[in-house]
Image (cartoon, rainbow, N blue to C red; front, side, top):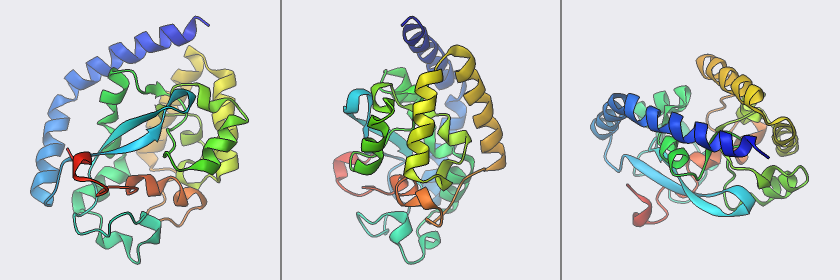
Length: 218
């Protein structure tokens, strides 16, 4: 009961430091995105937060503005042609997720926790209910992300999220954080274009409603 409050304090402090320290990186990526292709720098998506509430998650844009609207990446005939040059780098390095530091700072997310599902990923949300994984704050990275990432089927991912809930502690969060750094360095579990089992519900998140409404563009 004590750790969740301590966890929020850690999230607040580290996200604040992250925004300050990484501000040059943010600026460099913003410039690169604008120079590489037309369109907004950021986009937001409706995701599932703690207790199945909804919140807008932030990401750097990785797709071209002429990408067919409301079409998941894995359903595009040739997804590579729609991903920008900078976007490929952002996806491979997971730097497209950096704006979520702001989501963490304002309390919508945590650094470590189950990755927030899309609002319409009903199968994943239902499966997570079995393990209480919808009752904790979603994270920038988590136990499932260092144990398969895009390659995991929904039932396995939900089970790993449930395992995280049961083992949630400072030590386990540190383990997940270090594991994430290793996974990102190796690009483990990244399946571009939807060839993996879970790409139909996780990689699609990078494109769900990129151009759904102009109000969603930043």
